[in-house]
Length: 373
Image (cartoon, rainbow, N blue to C red; front, side):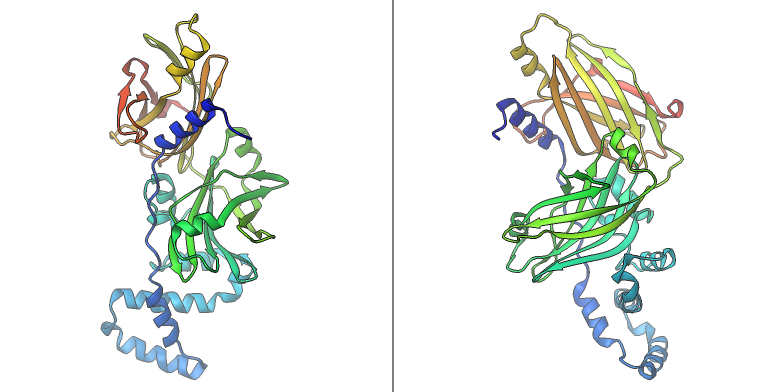
C-alpha cells in the first residue's frame, strides 16, 4: 500500500532526527584463529603446553595472551553454547575476557546500550540456526523494561559487502507468546569473516506492551533472507535489567507557549532507555488542517541532562491526530546519576540532515528526577 505524502514526510523527519549508529569494532579474528591452531590436541600436550605458557608468558603481547585465553574458554564451553543458554558462572568468565566481553560495550551513538554492555547487564546466550549454507547466531540479549536488544551474526553465501548484506536481510521479527514484533533498528553491519556480518538490533516498546513481558521470557527470533523460502529461526531468553533509578511520570507537566501547547503525556526512565511521550497542539484553534500539519510536522524533541549532555536519539514514531501531533521519542541513555533533564522542543529547518534546529525556548520543560518515582 502506498503511504500518503504526510506519512512519508513524517517518516523522513523521524529518520533525520535519529543518529546513525556506527559499527562496533570487529573481533580480532585472525588472532583467535592463530590461538585455535596453537591449542594442544591431547591431555598430555595440554599439560606440557600449560607449563610452557606459564614460563614464557612475558613473550606474548597482552592481545596475544587474551586471544589464547579466549580460545581456551570457547573450546571448553562448546557444549554449553549448543543449548542456547549459558550458565551464570560461564557467562561471567566469558565477560571477563576482553576479546569476548559484551558486544554492546563498543556500540556508538547509543549511550544506554553501551553502558549496559560495559556493566555486563545483558544475558549471554549462544543460539544458532542454519538452513543450507546460511547460518544465524545470537550471542547476547538485553531487555531493560522499555527496549529489547540482541546481537545477531549472519552468514549469507554470496554476500560480498555490507550493503549487499542489508539487501539480503529482508526482515527480522521477534515472537513472544504469539505476539510478533518487528521494525527493529540496527547498527551498520560489521564484517566478521567471509560472507559473515554482525549487527546489533534493538526495538523500543510502548509502555503497555513492555509491562506484559514481565521479568523473564523467551522469544523466537526469525530472520527472513532474500531467495530463501524458510526463515532462520531460534529461541532465546531475555531477562529484565533491574535498576533502582527507574522513573515513571504519568502524566507530566504542560507548557503553554506563544504558538504551541505542549503536554508531557508520559516520561519513563529505565536502565538504558528514556522514553518520552508528548502531545503538541497549535494554540490557534481556527487554523486549517493544512496549516496545523505544516506547523507540527517538523517539530522534534531533544533531551539534555544536568551535565549538558544531549541524549542519543534511538528511534521514535509520531501521528497527527485531530490537530495534535503525538510523538513517542526514544533515547539511549543511563540517567542513574542525573538529578534532572530538560526537554527542548525544536523545529527542523533547511535540509534533512537535521543540523539546523530552531529551539522553542518557551516550551522547554525541566523534569526533576529526584521527585519522580
